[in-house]
Image (cartoon, rainbow, N blue to C red):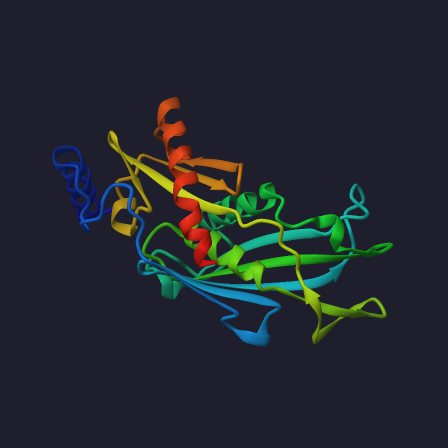
Length: 257
């Protein structure tokens, strides 16, 4: 870490503590502008979406594949989530196998979707030893902070327009469709970041240099999942306030999907 990192961290923290202001002029609980484009890659994927959150850009592709169920869940479909941090998206991203940041981001996004119950995995059962597997592939095109929310919104938007391939003779017929993937709810992730004694919503890449703790809250009409990150801590009252605020914000974001 160089001197510029520490100067930025001190500047962000000092501005919040002494003036209650953010470096980009937003209110503490203000989200950056959100753009969502569904079916972004057309027939090249079973479902897709592009999300721009501020200057963070994410592309998600969904693939529905025929596979074998887990032995302990023989009549249940599956879902997997992966995140690719492309080197073009940020100088610190490198080519190669998934790294800690990639794995953490994928797990937080996966949990918010999975725990919402928006996919009925029992309906992805085809026949004995055959199930549908939903693969969520998240590509970070530009990282300007808060990959959890940008990636989560892109993933659920892509699932919402996913088509089911036709199934014949034990295989999926690519390019031919048999209807849409049924989605029963729309989980919305909202990430709060604690910097010193202040909590901000949707931290950008500059603010992330100063974050002590992070809390991602995923909601539908109920609380689905919470995931904390960072070495700092939230008090119980702060967690309650974050959850309350997440429920307030979610309907507006959900309307974009």
